[in-house]
Amino acid sequence: MSNIILPEEIKAEFTINSDGSTVTSIRGAARLAGVNEKALRYQFSTAEKSAPKLAQKLMEHGFNPAEFSTNGITEVALSVILEFYSFDAGARCTEQARFVYRAFASIGIRVWLQEQLDYQATSSNPTPDSTLALIDHIFSGLYKLNIKPELIESAKLTAIAKTFPHLATAAEESKQLVSAHNQVEEIPLSPTKLGKIIAEQLGLSKPISARRINQILIAVGFQDSERVSNSKGKTKIQYKLTKLGEEYARIQLDTAKGHNKTIYVIRWFKSVIPIITEALNNDQ
Image (cartoon, rainbow, N blue to C red; front, side, top):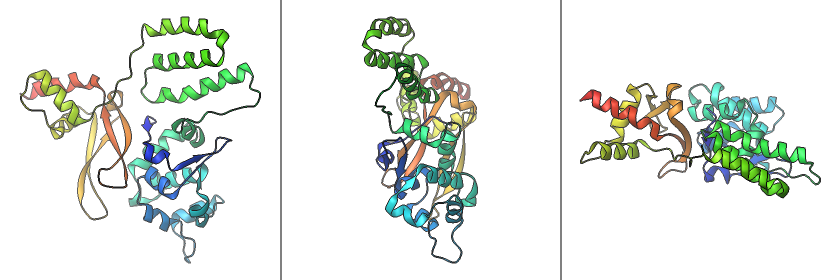
């Protein structure tokens, strides 16, 4: 999926240069890939007789992993790291790395990072055509994020009106046409919040548990579940969005409570509520 939103904690680990290229810290790369920072630093070791597999892969691409602590990780090196933890790390592959890799695979990591970091290129003497093309490019990535197209078009028209004041009247008339279909973007909900809303609609005295909501979402084919183990051997249930469920949800990266670690979570749109309610009624 490409509809991933980076939390501010990860964005803060990036530096974006004037030419639009980016550099991130080892900590930022680890959190983006969903791996332990110490484990990633070990993978950069080149002093051993047999360097770790990731270090070898980076050196094959012309990088010196030993310099990452000082110079940071370029976006190309970052793409190699994310590809490694998506497909080549064996048991250490992470689903989060796959999500991020798929998000930029079709458009390139620089364009994807520029969109995530709100980068806007500047030119000393931009032409009207190049400026309009740039505005269109800036907003193009939003179409991958489950944002209503009319909202994006309205924002784009506002940007055009501010950039070219003589087009403000035409832009405003276009916005009025768009506004007839324009709605405020919906905030996706957690299973806990869905349980509260549905319980209120059904007149129940207690909220429906998040566990029950997740069970129903599995039953209707919108997500799958599996048990995963952490480094201490503790297991927990992890949910994965299915192709069928993509219409009703989006994936967000978040900071795990009590841990300096990034995790991915599934958040659901209100359009899923009637389906959950019907499933509940059928169970009774």
